Length: 273
Image (tube, rainbow, N blue to C red; front, side, top):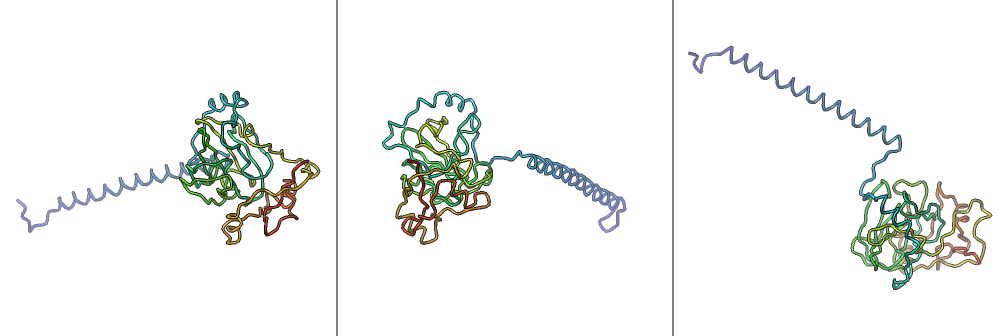
């Protein structure tokens, strides 16, 4: 019998054997996990380079619903609303509503203030660099909802009550976009509607400078609050040029930048006679 004071070589061997087995098992697991992680990251990089980018925080849109509404959209009218829809800002139509694009794209200057198309309540504010980028959802009467995508700075929060004179934020280039514009979606009872059936006419993007609107210039409405924010540096009221939309692009958008002033810092929009 071995006493507690004697050295047991078998116990040492057993302990040593157990001690050697555990690290080997752990190393194998770590090595396998490392290979799996590298393989996963490699697949993600390849998918990203191929153009398959994940869209975060954007609910999926059922194509069947869009197609069903597309055939009925001409029958939808905003006559029952207390006031008609207005444009979120002046600009040009660059992408129409379709079964795969449940909204319209309105191109304009970077930093242009975005107004809600009707009075309502902010029900969702999302900050994301995928898909629609930063966007705001406003709920209106008659179960209408509007979504404003690819925003830059956002000046509202959930549950804010907004008017057509309010500023939701600024036109930006967040998300999947190649230039400053607002992706505008309108839905009623959860079904997508072609915004062009409810909005005032939106001119198509001119193919050449000669196609730009010619006529009288009229100022785009601007509130005193926006002017105050402009003076305090909280909002850029004068749209700026960018590599994607140089100054000549602003002229083609129909803006007479020479008539901009401190009283009306927004360039005037040229309207056809």
